[in-house]
Image (cartoon, rainbow, N blue to C red; front, top):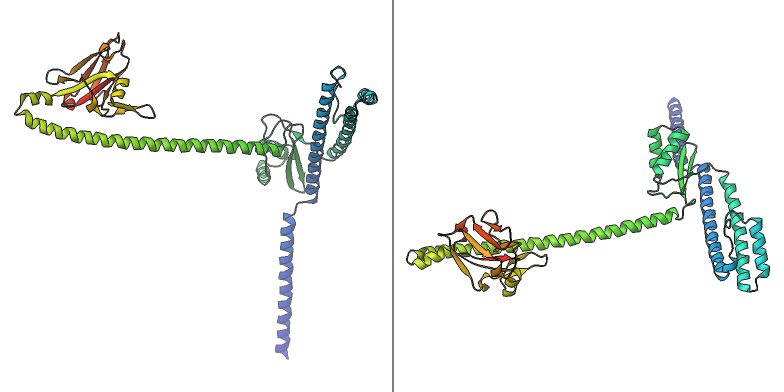
Length: 391
């Protein structure tokens, strides 16, 4: 009997433990979902703010309508134009109401009579909506009116740390939970809520000409346009870089080819120079021609690429070339007249693998009537054919 009794006791304890566990889990889940639910006060605050924003939009649309109607009437009645001062959310003065009533009675055109009556009706609607909105605003903490240069974060931080007295670290934690507007316009109204340890912040249009949502759409379109512009510029830059790389590779191949050809030619001429004095003279001479860029281009000696840089085409197409024996001179004098110019402002040596300042130097006379090509490394110009382009 005793073992059966102990068995029943253990079973009862197990049931009690199971019930306790279920209750604890239920309490934890209840606290979890309760903590995630928006407090009733916050919900009511948000609904009232949304109602104010809706009423404000209704007022704005009616004011726009009133303004359009009054402009139509004034354009048709320039001598009896209606004074629009005060028309809108502030209602009409008794004098304005009397003027409009008299105009309606006197107006013979039914369309303009209806127009004036619509102005009166809309003005009355605006007054009623304004009264309703003011009643709702009176039930809420006054909003903060945004000034130029202020940010949503700044206003929220000032509210929590200044008005409510919350520590900065805790205020930052509360603000991080909210979706702040990245851009504000002067006149926007920021409604801040604090209750039951819950913070909320909402933005309405207020007196600004643009609504917060419209401003976000405008900003997004601007960012999208700038992104497309930057993407197109990046793609163009990549294409230009690829083109420059291709041209550099092409020039490098030409330089290597020319160097190989020149080396081979020098070998052959060196061998022949031992047998022929004339060949020796040719070996130690540089063949050149002085001319303008445009004339060389017409001859096919030079060509100009898309980016405006001149490059060597075919030097063999040069006519009326001259030669200079490098054993006797290291300077080539050229005159503006021989190129058909009155003055020389610029001179370049082609092919461009000859490096200015290392292989040669250009000196232009002060009067620009003449110039001098000084060969700093004469051996580089042995048996070479060059074009001295001037302009």
